[in-house]
Image (cartoon, rainbow, N blue to C red; front, side, top):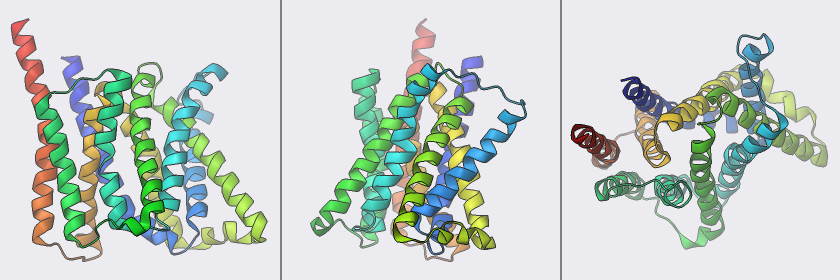
Length: 311
């Protein structure tokens, strides 16, 4: 019973994660119009680390990690946020958002492959087909928007592929680590890695071009601070905690498919907040995505019920 309750909470965490990430694109748009993307990442992870460290510094939450533990978790932080965001940022320089959306939709597929190789996770034919159905829904939406992939953007596409693979690798590597470490411990270390790397990159960049004052200049803009707070606290810190918790109780391949729901949340957010139009193909894609997510998870649930009844 306790296991069933934990899995239910893990599904809730996965949906909440998708909702937070889906709305984050709106706030990213707000921040990058005010500050350089590297500065946004530097500020974002610095604020995230400060917020998550407050209960630790006051002793409200204990983190018991030795140096050996840090070395085990640091590679997780290098995969995401460092490589994931770095490849994504530079990939978007020579590609468009539609290409990024299509490639990002492939994360569950990459996760399925990596999880089957490294974690020996097994999925049924129904689960595999459902996962592909969800991916097809995302690709259909972006293809109908008229933003197909172009081979002229090959460099950006390759970098975006590396970004997607890095994020899939994060999900696979996090799965065994969640059995040994608490979600907050994993979150704290990965945020620390992101904070150090992105702030070092931002400061080196400003020192090179002689614009150190520009590093803190955006922090005087209230709209920037508001958007940054969402990205740092919800989209970075809370989403990492939710992801770590979900991976504690669910297979990596099943958690990853929920990421496609973020596309629907992003569309809904754009329609409600930015008054962006919603077309018929959005609804068709939404049905495919939701059917794929349900099929990937419910098929395995039925298998467990059958196995329990036989036992």
